[in-house]
Length: 351
Image (cartoon, rainbow, N blue to C red; front, side, top):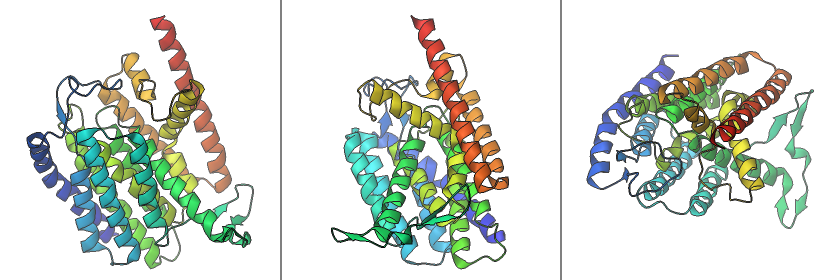
């Protein structure tokens, strides 16, 4: 257990040291979120705040991983693709590039990792048994479905987690707190096997390294934030999406621990499509915006998200596959109903 704690501490310390330097250079080279220059409907700050939060996070994860994790193809592909994620985020942090370009690059980066061997070869049937995609050993248009389906599911999952967590950074401290808790839960879950193989140790170490970097960044992002995550911090969602696949603890665990952000993302996408707008269209309809409209402080909202993630994470560690399915459905229904109720009440108040 000491090696996993070492990973957490090392990445935590590196992030603590690297973030002030990032803040300095972000100010010097104008990687700033200035509400007077960058018109964004979801902005709630009034003064320029440095962005580029993904830089110290990635530096910490990369350095700690090289020191503590056995070098292999999976690690190199994760770090190379992660670097592309951060560089893309930096371009967006400075120039606000098209969300469609960002989305395509996300798919490309997820694909790099997936084609190095990361995939979802099977899913557990909550009602019993396992759905193994090897049964679809059929070639169509040159693609073997037994290989293609696991790869496509993995790409979709990684990109989904990246964007879902990116939408959960509306108030100070919200995103890194959720990411840290999710990574810790996945790390613990990956160690709950009678015999630990090298793959379990790899995933657990990377999970705790990710958690340490997130907590280190949280110190500077907690309200009032000295630095924002920016789009470059989607590296956290990228890593969580990957370790949740590699951990062999079933994606249901990751879905449940991120249940509130998941419900918020699903409601947001549905709402925007219903209004015939792009899912990437910005607005103030996320749960954290609705809570702000109800008078909640940024700190209270962030802690609410952390507490919910922690409680659902602990629950995920104790439930069976069937129990997780029912818990996920219940959380999505309750959280979705809560969001829609707040939306209706807020609309009535302003009408």
